[in-house]
Every structure is written in structure tokens, then in C-alpha cells.
Length: 378
Ligand code: BGC
Image: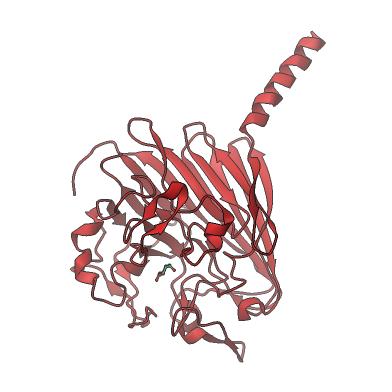
């Protein structure tokens, strides 16, 4: 009997092992740092791969309506791809402050700070050499009763990329066993007041990364309002209704239906921060976005604790060659970046992005993949 129990427990642990996050070597950065890749799986067909460089989502495979799996995010097969000029923040954790800071300047507690200008005339996505997408994070895989995850940690020293405070940041990617869902949780602490605004910059094409366009996808955003910008994509400070504009996605709409009206604007298409409608008091997460690709039947629902979402329609994609030699054409993927509003550090009326010593920054976003129940057109 004792022997039977022992054999049984061996068998159970063998199965448990098979489920646990698997680590493989993803190669080295150009300065010789080893990069690890972790594979996380659900029981219903989702396979996600995340790497330690930039705490980056490298692959997300999800089944279509016929059960055929496809990788639905843009990226590369090696670290060199991610280090190349072609990389427009594919799949990475973006920060310390995602999106733009006007003229790379802000003042905090009576001190002026100047950051790198990497998107004339502004600072974009946390800087140049040591922004959070470019550094190698430490990874720790973990397993709970409900799924598997990897927790990435990085300590950014005081003054890195011009930002004040030593910031310890954590990002975990957790794949639920029973659903095709990825829960991304960000945490940070600091030893001096500093702005922080983290997001994930995955480029989605639900028809499969490398499909020609994303203009045929249908999008719904839970946002009646957005933050208009100047010609350099810095918010003016106003919060304006989307009603009657091509930005009205309160009902599901084909992305391509009205985009041409925005082609000749500074955004070159969709590249706007939407103000999410308030989260109901009894809910931990707010519904942010619904994306559907008719042909494959794949859907993506995004839930978040953030007040905003940047909808960027891949206007700067320029035909770079990515995973498996596939071409990433203009507007062939969409980013849905949950975030605090851009340039919040310079707008007192926006929800604050300032993290203070003793406080913890903590926010989660869920990516929930599914299959459309009906194929109604919009
Ligand atoms: C920004 C775009 C930018 C893109 C890639 C998005 O988050 O809103 O303006 O071109 O990232 O850097």
C-alpha cells in the first residue's frame, strides 16, 4: 500500500512537472548577457513565451475557430532581432514611463529633470539605452493551483535614463490553467518620488503575426472620451468626447472603416489615448477592449485596473522581417497599451503617475483570448 502511494505520488509529480514553466536559452545580448525564455501553457491551448530581455512577450499561440493555433504577436526568433533598429518595442514591458513626456522635461518636488529626446521633440517609452525594454530582468517561475507564471524583477538605479529614485520593478505573467488568459501584474517601489507608468507593448494580429493587415479586425473600446494631443502627440490637457469622430469605438467597428480620415493627422492613423469609462465599484477590473478577427474567429478581451488605453494601429510598421521570415507590413498589427495618460507628469488634472517612497505601485491587466460565438458583421 505504502509502495502504491509512493508510485502514485511520483506519477502525480511527474505530471505536475510537465505543466510547469519550461526555461530555455534564448541566446545572448550583444554585450554578452544570457537571455532566458519561459514557456507557459493553459489547458485549453494557449502557449505564451516570455523572455528576460525587457520582460517581453515573445510569442502567444492561440487556437482559431477550427482549433488551429497561430502565434498572434509580432517579434523575432532571436535576441539580435529584438536588439535591431527594426524593433519598435515589440511585446516588451515599456517604462519607466510609457508613451511621451513633453520635451523630455518635468519638475518634481522643486527639482527639474531632463530626459533623453528619442522621439523629437519628446521623450518616448522610458529612454534610449537603459529603458526597461532593453535591460535583462531576473526571472523566477512559479506555479499555483490555478496556473503558472514567471515573475521578472529589475532594480533600476537612481538616475537611470535621467529618472530620480532607485526603482525596484516587478512584472509577472501568469497563465491560468482553465482559460486562455494571461494576467500581467506590475509592481514597483522607490526610494525617492518618481513618475512610473508601465505597460506591455505587444503588437497583435489575431489572424496570425505576419498577416497582411489589421484593418479587417473589429474593435470595441470602453471609452466615451480621449485625450486630444498637439502635433507631437503630447496631450493638450483636454478630455474630449469621441462621439461623432473616427475615434468612436463604443460599439464594435472595423478598424479600417474610418482610419483614412486620420492618415493626414500627426498620429498617421490611430495612435490615441482613450479614457476608460469608470470601473464599477464592485469590480476589480474594468473592461477596456474587445478585438475580433472574423476569418479566424479569434477574439481578445482586455480587462485592466489602468485608467487609459493607447490604441496604436501600427502606422510606423514598415515591412520589417520578423519571426519565421514573415513580413510586418504597415498597419498589420495593433497595440492596445493599458496605461495612465501620456505626459501625466506634466498634467496635474490627470490621474497621478508619481510613486512615493513607502508606497507600492501595483496594477494588473488581463489578456483573455477566445473564439467569437457569432460572426455578425460590423
Ligand atoms: C506610441 C506610438 C509609437 C509606438 C512605437 C506607441 O505606444 O503611441 O506613437 O510610434 O508606440 O514606438
